[in-house]
Each structure stands twice: as structure tokens, then as C-alpha cells.
Amino acid sequence: MKTMRENAARAINYRLCILANWLAGSRFNVSVLELTKYLLKHGFESKARSMVRSVGEETDYYVIRLKDIEVPLYYPRGLQLLDFYQVIVEQCFPDSWHKYSCDHTLVEDGDIVADCGAGEGLFALINIAKCKRLYAIEPHPSFVDALSKTFGGHENIEILPFALSDRLGDAFLSDAGLTSSLGVSIEGIPVKVTTIDTLFYERSVPCTYIKGDLEGFDYLMLKGAENTIRENLPKIAVTTYHATNHAELISRYLKKICPEYNILEKGVTNVFRKPIMLHAWVD
Image (cartoon, rainbow, N blue to C red; front, side):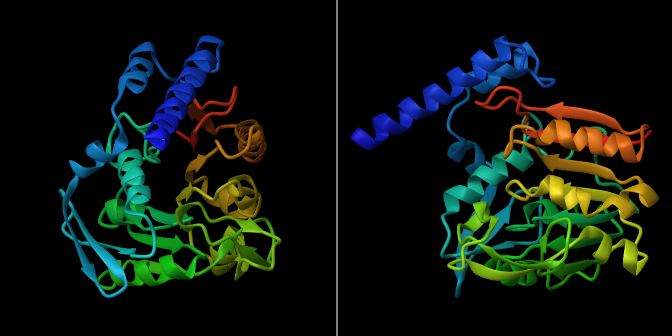
């Protein structure tokens, strides 16, 4: 009972911080109506379950079938399903501030997509039939194996087991499921680090869409994509809530490469001046 009260208190405090930041001017394209809906919304679990047809089990995986998606998604059984339900709410509902695809950054026919931080694969699953080819870039071994199960029947996807930054090298990945991140601790999972330019520009692959959710490494990933961005002017959708200054840094960086980039910051967090998403595109 105490834990439930503590969780409720934290949730209320989080929403009050969002309200305070919005009132102080940290609005990031969130209207009064959108804010009101967010503040009054119920928990995410029931909303997510409305999108789930069934959850089964197969050896080391949950087998999750979602409404309107024929192909099942394989999710490691060692991880919490509630974390995946949070992702469903973020990616399957149009009112989500965390949604990677907005009106200007939709995955379209002919796109070659770099799914940076592919994780459990929901973004790829939603968009695999829309694009020409999708590269699911994910360093965590459990997710790499699960992605191979989910997309085994698709020919237009390549799963690349790398972490991304602005230089090549080796690093350690914290073993924290969907929130795993790069670090220097030798207690983590050893992973290979590469760049978008290495995977695309140097292989003459014309990337036209970059999605990034890299637990704070989105800016460095884009720094390692300079030639790819300059040559292809891809649509870009990246998270910016992991670091306070990332939205400003990314916006300035993209404008320096191409002044014609349009920038849309979206979503209020509990930290002032830190939007959830940055969308960028050239008309």
C-alpha cells in the first residue's frame, strides 16, 4: 500500500512539474488541449492493452500480437512487459508527444530508414511495409536476437548489431533493457561502436530517414552522420529528453549542415527547456 501511495505521489508530482514548465513557457508545440488531456490521462497500461490482441510465450520470448499488425513481435521474457506497454502508448497513439512520426517525418514509400536504437522493434514493425528498406541498428544482444525472430520473414530489413556515436570503437552497454545506455563500466556488455556515415555514406546507401532513441547519444550519433545528412537531407526524428541542451545542439548542428532544415520540437518534460522529441525535415 505504501508503494502504491509513493508511486501515485511521484506521478502527481511529475505532472505538476510539466504543468509548471508549460506555464513558464517551456511549451514545445503543446497546445492547451493537449496539455489538459495529458494531465488528466489514466495510466498507460490499460491504454496499451487496448492495442494488444494476445500475448503468448515461446521459449525465451513473449509473442505479442498487436491490433492492425499481422506479424507478431518477439520480446525477451527476461524483461518487464510493462516497459513494452509504455512503448506501445508512445508509438501507437497519435496524441503521444514521444511518437517518432509526425506529419513532417512520416516513413513513406521509397524511404531507406536508419532505425537507430531499434530496441524491441516496434517502430520497425509499424513501418517495415511502408519503406523500401530498413536498417535496425541495435547493440543489445537480447534485442538483436528478438529482432531476428520478429523479422525473419522480411527481406527488406537488415539488423546491425552496433552502438552508434561520432567515432568507431568499443564500449560497454548497461544491461537495463529498453533503457540500456553506453558507458565506461567494464561490468556492462561489450559492444562495437560505429557511425551512420560508416554504415551508409561509405557504403553508398542513400539514407532518407533517421530515427534515433539512444538514451542520450542521439546528438553524437548525428555528429557521426554529417556526410549522410549533407548528401541525402534525410527526415530526422530523435529523442532530446535525455540531456537538457540536446535540442538546441541538434538544431544548431543541422542548420549548419543545411539552413533549409525545418525544426519542430515537441513535448513537455518535468525539466525546464527540455522537449521530448526533435523532428527535422527539408521541404
